[in-house]
Structure formats: C-alpha cells, structure tokens
Length: 516
Ligand code: NG6
Ligand code: CA
Image (cartoon, rainbow, N blue to C red; front, top):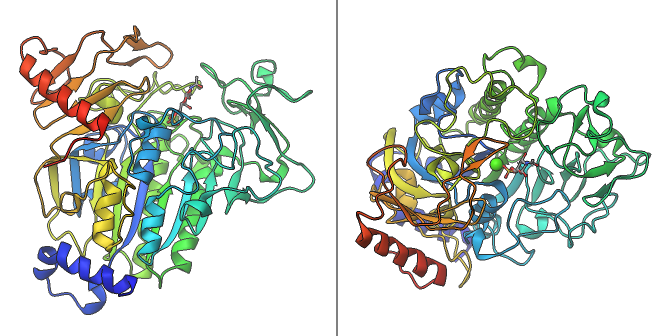
C-alpha cells in the first residue's frame, strides 16, 4: 500500500463522521494541507477574539469565527525553545537538560536523527517547509558554525524540504535569514562572524556606544552587537547586505511563505509558519506605525494579524482554503517589557495580555503556558465553536499522524497522544491531564478541575525585569480551576487531590503512565 492510500484509508476511519455529514466532491475529500501559524509571546488576552479591546485582529477573527477557538489550550513550556522542541518532536523538552532558551549559535537541539513533525508529514507524502523563527539550534556544535558556508546540519535533516528561517530570535545574533541551511542573500564582501563569548575588536556594542542605537534601546540585557540601530544578545561582525532590517522581518517571512504556497499549490503541504511577532525587539513596518494606542507592542499584534491575512488571502486566491487545516497558536504566554525601551508597559491602556490568567511568559502560573489555540478547516470542521476542553500542543504530532495515516516509529514522539478528535471537534472529552513546564523547570499538572504546581526552591516571586509573577513556592500549590486567577492555594484543604496529581506527574516523568 502506498502512502496516499494509507492516508486516504485512515482519513476515512478518523474523520468518518465529519465527512459523512457533508456531500463533498471526491476532490474535497483529500487529506488537507496543514499550516501551523505559531506566534511568539502572544498572550491569552492579546487577540480580539480572546477579549482584547485595544487592538483589532480581523484575520485571526475570521479563523475563530469559522473554526474552533479553544479556551484551555496549552503550549508545553512558558518559553520558546522547549515549547518548539515539544511541538516538533512530540517529546517533552524537560526530559533533556539542553532544551532551555537557546543561544543564536546553539548547535542543533533536535538531533538530526530524531523523528519530527516534518518527518511525519513527509512520510505521508507531504511537501514540508518552515518559515520564520527557529530557535532550536543549527549546525553540529554550539559556537562552531561557519556562517559563511552551508551548515552541515540544518532543517533539511529534520524533514523540512524547504526552510527560510531566523536562527534564533530577533534579539539574538546572527541577524540574517537562513535559507535551506545557508545564509540568504549572502554577501561575499562581508563575511559573518558570531560569538557568544567575546566581542570582535573594534565593533561597537549597545553598552559602549548607546549613541548608535537609533531604532531601539535596551531596558535590560540586549546591549551587545548593534544591527540596524538595535543592540542584541551576542556578538557578530559582518553580514553586509544579508543583515535583516527589523521593520521588514514580517514581510520577508510572509512573502517567502506566500511564494511557497503558490509554488506548491498542486501538492499536499505542511507549512510551519513561525512569526517573529510579537517577540522583542518589536519594530514593525512603517505601515503599522502610529496605528495602535498601545504603541509598538500593539502594532506588532497588528502585524501578526496582517501576516495571517496574507496567508489566508493567498489560500483563497489559490482555492485552497477549504481543504487546509490551519492551527494558530503561540509558543508561550505574554511579556510586556522583555528588554527594550518600547514603552509597552506605559501604553497598555488597560489591555491585559494574559487576559484573566495570572503570570505570563516564564511563569508556572497559567499565563505562562495557556495560549490562544484556533483550528480552522472548512472541509473538516462543520460547526464553528468555542471549546473549553483541555488540549496541549504536545499531542499535535500524534494527532496529525492519525489524520494523515503516517506511522510513528516505535519509541518516537512518545509523549504525544492521538487526540485528533479534540482538534477537529468530533471528540469533546478533555485530555485527562496536561503538563506545563516553566522557565525554571518547575512542572505543573492541569486537570479539568485542578492545577497542581510542584514545590520548588526558586525564591523569586516576581521576575523583576519583566515584572512577571512566577508562581514559585517552596510548598505544593493547588488551585481550583473553576475559579479564575490561581489566587487561593488549597493544597492543605485537599491533600488527596495533591497526592493524585503528584502521582500523575511522577508517572509522566517515569514514562509509566497510560492515558485512559
Ligand atoms: C531572555 C531575554 C528575552 C527573550 C527571552 C527568550 C534578556 C535579558 N532577556 O533571556 O528578551 O529573548 O530570553 O524569549 O536577555 S523566547 O520567547 O524566545 O523564549
Ligand atoms: Ca516565545
């Protein structure tokens, strides 16, 4: 049996109900294209359809109005690298020690031989591509890359046929796009050198040359090499015409994705579209400037929505919208001052980036990991809805493998469960528990009724620079999730619940749990 017939068979089994209800032509019964739209640091309360009033997000609204908007959807971690690792491998990042926020010159964190989401789609006959923020390392060894030649290990080794990415984040060097494992627009006359150890002689830094920071100044950290009038984390030299301009990052990423869609309109594709918005440095294109009362952070949300709109418009033009499954989400919760003087705090104007949730990016509290999740697939989701069931990004690999009929090699993606029915609305039972991972490696267990946060020895209540409540305590915490806000620790009142959730966590850690 070839891949496509396995896919068709499995689709018939998995999506039987959804499909039986409608009378689609045989063309429309095909397996869908799949696009992940993965925002950066976009909080639970940052989108209009999740209650934001200070910014309008019409393109995301369109997805929500015609799809499923989840109110209890989780990223695996409250920072980028571990969330992305978990999403793309179906294994919890916290099982490994080296999956914390990565430097810009980190070596490949997902090992080239490891099984990934892209491998899964490829085995099911999909064309696969990644755009935008990567932040999972490149090349074979940290700090040893030669950025002036093709990297010996890159996304092609992880199942992506095509990639146009930023190595890490916009606030980390190298500030260049990498296309299929080599610097895009490479400038022969200006070779690239990168170091996270020391500066290159004679090169200015934000710390020593603040007068050169004509676009954005740091509020904390971010005072090393200067590119485009903004200082960054890490040192770099050279780059010439390959260097990005922050105001054009969204355009570059989006237009490469649009081009890809046009070129692959007649193939089945999986696209990982990971925006730089709304991570710092927030420096959106001029056309968004002055358009939002929250300033740069609000304008970055508008720019994110614009990117979503460009993707949708292109799918519409190509006649692909109905049979493309789009999942929109974020890698972690929101942060307001994340290290640049962008006036995000002063200009909030009553906006609550995490909505009703406590904490934000980096936290063990809900604001760290509960994020927007919207699934849109006109051919497969017949009834738009708002769903409060518990779901987690960790399951997307196995769920989409069930959709495509891909077989996951034994032992791979072992934390990922097939919960496809949850994603497309045919099964409304909660995931029985969701594991949340905070920046300091504290784990929490969320069930429909409860949230347990394990005791830790991190004495910080608040992350000072970002003013984020971290949710740390030396004793176990238990919150009643039928009450918003994680305010009253009821662990002492319900020791039996604490015990039960500790058991779940212990078994997940030891990999001895079987989900019912
Ligand atoms: C922190 C950075 C922050 C951001 C974060 C990663 C400083 C002071 N802060 O260390 O600005 O880059 O790392 O964010 O450097 S993430 O969304 O990619 O995980
Ligand atoms: Ca992030």
